[in-house]
Image (cartoon, rainbow, N blue to C red; front, side):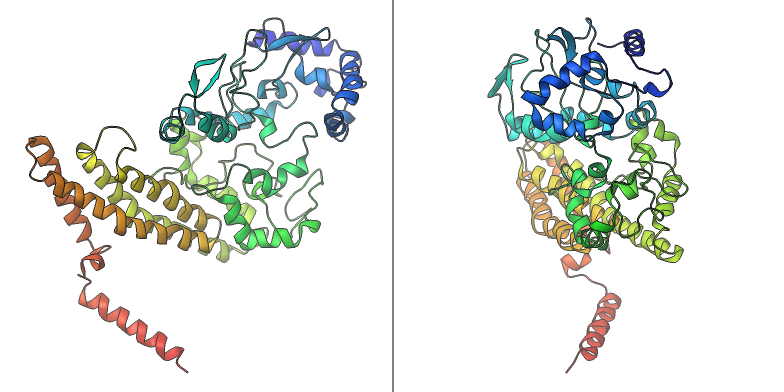
Length: 480
């Protein structure tokens, strides 16, 4: 593994290369090692050579060796035509030249993406969906192909190195955003800056983010494509000036924002950031949304000192390049109100009911129908609603979001909990009988709350009269 001392050795070694100036690691000519690599790869890997030839690295005389060099002590290093190299290029390697960008990335949730390996989501892929059928040298007892080819490809794997210095095939290829590397670093810059061109223009396109931010539980790319932002982007992509070096919104383009525009790229008053959490004011991943500084604190990230109000101000600065203050303020009122609705009507009571039901459930996670029901309510449908409003995608907020939450809450979740009560209320096990009684009481309290009284046909006369009045006004307005 590359320690700080070893890194210093590499830096000194780089400075000793011909043509390397000490300031900014600018190569005035290509090193002999990289010239030799390029001559071979020009014949053997022509697509790779072409991509590299289109990159800034090529124009700066940065070649294969400058990125792939390895020390004798590196576990992932191996001999390759007389040079010690490593297959993986890690953020520590990139940080030799891109120190600031890597420091920001290391402070982000992206860098911690592989921590899913111990999560409830990965339990699904490892146990419920998978088995130990995929056996490799690093996994002689087997590992789930569902996890290897699904979860790990976006979140990142812990890359295992074989005795020959090559990565184990269960963990490589992998460019997961939070990949755990042999040198102790976390992340993969190539997750966004695809090798070997490392194009800024490509990293700025929504599709780059959409490789991972899509699907039933976090459909950001689908929401973006539905939104006015996405529509404007696709209609005006030729006006986006994606290849511009500076690429400041309001100066270099104004046709539409991309994911990068809002979450990372420069404005007239903010520089580029590789910490994608610095402009979000809600973390909508958990059952109940939390403020980002709280989630940063849980991960031990420096963002724990940055309040959600500061982050919202950062995002508002982006919005104001195209929208006025009233528009932006009103959007955030709408956003917060949807979060409040989801929390108060479904998430908080739903979580309390699930916790109350646990003593009545079979102990294995996901061995009960209600496990799947509750999981999909918050992890799929609740997230879709919250992400939908955050990105102004009305169909995902409603039909794919709150409608699905409500449908499964009332048509599956509540009946499944009632069945648990009925099955255990006369149990010979005193603990289960007591748990069934408590769950029944909590169900009664929940359903008799004003949010749910309609389900019991107990809507208040005042509310019913108001809704009848509104219905009549609607019918009169549109009567022929």
